[in-house]
Image (tube, rainbow over all chains, first blue to last red; front, side, top):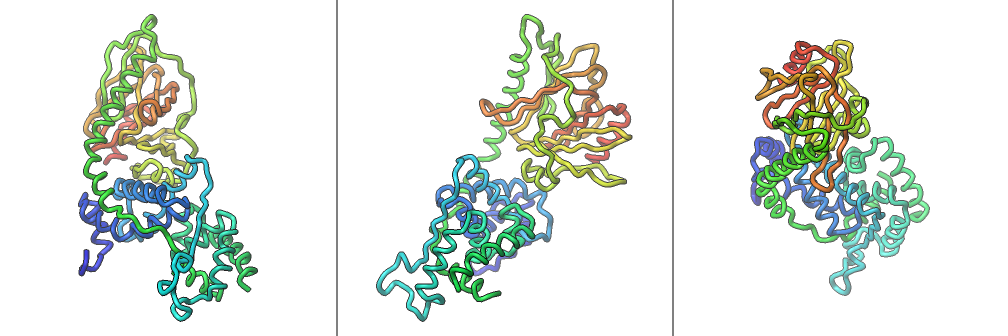
Length: 182
Length: 233
């Protein structure tokens, strides 16, 4: 893949015809966002890896009905997130997503300097704590939207909710966070 | 974007997620071994269904006279029908869903006949099975499409009350009409399987490609054949 631009439509077309190598390239391109989406919903790396893997297998099997020209990422994320939710339901537990800033894990020279970090340590810690205290559904929406950079449509697909619900959920979460941030 | 939202985006750059796993190798390995596993699992499913047929009818009262497979279905002629009730056409298929959700759940894209009016709004999805209720000739008709190793069905009928005849449809088709026969849905495999039983009416059953199609309703053979050909046209 190195040195070759990823032509998503071409890869999808080839994968739909049964080209497993083309699909592997799609897996390579989207495995990061798929894994992190599952992680946000499950709060556990091992479960998230399995959910993402199962999601890719199911997406491969469902490729035949993927509409040509439609965006692949929200379609894939919906399948992966569905796998994650099923695992969570089957395990009968809530996700405990432990978010940490990289700077908490680093020390000395490895830690970002105030110049390289966009946020002050105080703001970072305050915001992280506030996100951590949000209800599950709001924390998921905020994490997917701002930490993973998903569009509202993609968040809606991942959470299996109407876009309007995602907007209101995000809005409520932002209100809570604003209290901590201001 | 507000200042708070910008701060959240910036925070996202610094949030530490677990290292991204390499899923390519794992997915490749599963794709390579899948056809063999699916074929084996499907064979097991058919054996389970055949075994279920034998076990569901007490030998003291009934015996299987003959049976055969057509796609995901097993059709058996028996001496005595097992207990079953009249139930709605979609009984046992789960809650009604949108087409998209049913297709996601089934991992199948449903093939529908060309509609003059509005297409159906309720669908049913199980792994390997997608179904919907059509309105045809003023009658409700259940259309079910099956694939994979997760769903199978068995039919038991009495002869001569119920007749079974071949029809030229898809790769192979049969038309079942006359007295009620017993329909047994089976979802999942082995110990995890779920079985739903009810009495069924006139049925067209056929295979096309890797999919098994089933239409059920109070239609004539000619009506059902026309509808079926419109689906797998």
